[in-house]
Amino acid sequence: IRTPSYFYIVLEYCEAGSLAASIKANKFGPAPEALAKVYVAQVLDALAYLHSPTNGVVHRDVKGANLLATKDGCVKLADFGSAARMGGDGAVTRLANNKPKGSADEGDVVGTPYWMAPEVIKQTGHGRQADIWSVGCTILEMATGKPPFSEFGSQVSALFHIASGTGPPPIPEFLSAEAHDFLILCFNRVPRDRPNASRLLRHPFAIASPSSGSNSPVKCPTRPDPAPPVDQLE
Image 1 (cartoon, rainbow, N blue to C red):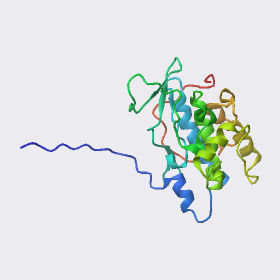
Image 2 (cartoon, rainbow, N blue to C red):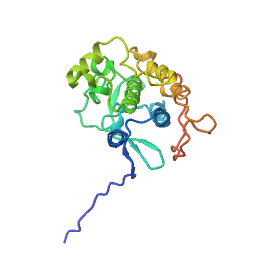
Image 3 (cartoon, one colour):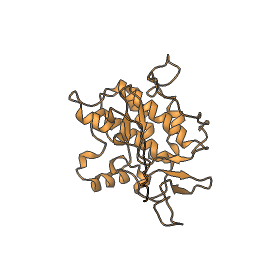
Image 4 (cartoon, rainbow, N blue to C red):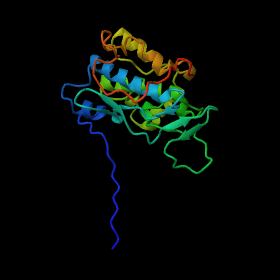
């Protein structure tokens, strides 16, 4: 008699669900800016760790649907199906190796249309900076309840405007001056001129509670190893 075998996948339970689902279900409307700051600080902390020279990982699909929250207000960056590792020579390799051996990933159009950076759409090569553009898109998603460029109706039209535009998407006037400045940095159309996650963590918008020992007043579990400084990253 053959003994049946079982394969178990154990996942952390995030009872608050995704930020995208929470925004849609919230009868009071999109997330207030104070809450968005808390979430953004945690997302940037995660990206600083992933983007570090030790890890060299680019998520490539940062958006509200891939940010899972706990009842304590901790945010987890999820769904690494599109993630890739950056090699020292600039080569990009998917973490989920579902492509033929030897195929290139640098020019992949990867992610979700409304959150994609211009260089991803234009297939001019992309790296850590594309995640920073997506962070800006996620802030607008939290602030307005919808992603930027969604007013164009179709994803194809949105992709065209993202790729061919010359400036940032419209930024709501009700956002603070520091939020506006933060978003302008995220939406710089020259990838190498976008600040990396480490630098953005020092921006006033990402500092949710200056009196606390962390950027976020929420006491979340710490990552296993501290991320090396990434100020020198492109």
